[in-house]
Image (cartoon, rainbow, N blue to C red; front, top):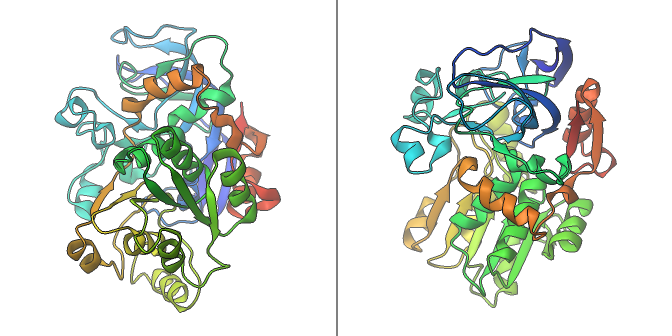
Length: 390
């Protein structure tokens, strides 16, 4: 089969690789119809996430048709159309029973690696380095899905791939960012990052009753999408002296009730602070750039909540812990527990409450995946989201 393979920093190739096989009777095999390039895939593309090996198959946002099932998979059958969540979860451990699926205790066979870096291991993830299990990803013609009796959700007839593909990751991730922020009717929310996850966090905040959502980014086309598709009040951080001061003024000196970081470890800023962050990251004095987290903490009102859904990989510098402690802030973070949110969000799509397809700006065949990575990472042609058709 054909698959998108990581061959080194900023080097992707679509190669012939062996077809996946059922290894365990809880597996299924999915013939992929649509897959996508995620913003967090760019962290791998740019070599910020360790333990990638040449030939690793990329991709954790995918859907398709079941073509084979293990005998212990009772909820799926050949021919079912499914969306596959990116965290691989056993369904039986303490974390899974608590619906903390991205913290599954049994799905990462390489758990010793993240234990050294993080203290404990998160779940296995499709196509996201050997740090999270080394599983083959879904930017391919076929994929093996472990624990298929826990992960994939069946899609009813009448919904297009474009409407439901993002149930695999970015729609639940945006929703969970708003959910962790404990948004109540009338709240004022600020979201850092107007990529696809940020767009869905904005939309989710409004669905939860937020009165106003401020969206922070530097790309005009992203800010325009946040305004026109999600109803946000936008701030281009390159056009203001201080995002924190701007938000303080806009909220009458109080600050937003909740702040959501949908950026992650490659966050940008401006001025000497950004230069220092880039330099320290290049010299490996820190692993992640956290300008968005810093601003979110400093901007949030006293007693408010900072929700972190942007992906981070290691250790950070200049973290304003004093602000968190002295102002009674709550910080919540996590890889999305996708399985928890998929049924509810599928229902919202069916009811017409949200159509996630609005973020798609580019569609390419799988054979042009390498071009898709170049377009997405360099923001060519106002690229917001690339979907690969198989």
